[in-house]
Image 1 (cartoon, rainbow, N blue to C red):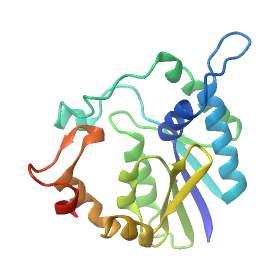
Image 2 (cartoon, one colour):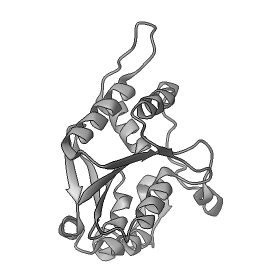
Image 3 (cartoon, rainbow, N blue to C red):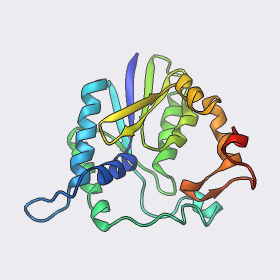
Image 4 (cartoon, helix red, strand yellow):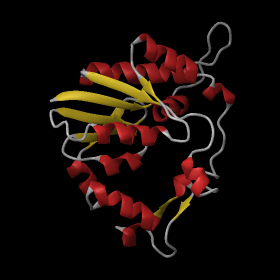
Length: 202
């Protein structure tokens, strides 16, 4: 099958930021995330040689989730400005490769990525590979949709297909929604049902 890589730009950005020690240009501009992101990106191109590729990024400001639940991601600490200042440089690199970037106000990159793969869900001759660090994307996995995520550092990765999701969690990808609803999601500050932990939710 032809391959379509969909990059979660923010996930790769944060992974690179934390994995690569501070690097600066001669002018003192911090570029460690740019360096790490580009290294990851080039490795993926080399390994998968996709026919299609695109990227998505979060935009500044609240999303519809904040409107529904004010405490959404309330525990998240804002990262240093040096991180966010590297986003335009990363986008410039993607533009140089003629990689389209999809973003939408009031939505997260996750939502945009979900919309893209859902739009292509019936294209059975195209293997859709979501490259992200967010395992929420596992709910999208099916016969032609896989999730590529980091295993260790920025070099080691793991691919989740239907069987890999079942092996790790004990249920099917589409049941991830119910699992999250029962257990909640501490990383996003979303409460679950009191008294229900991982085992009960599973």
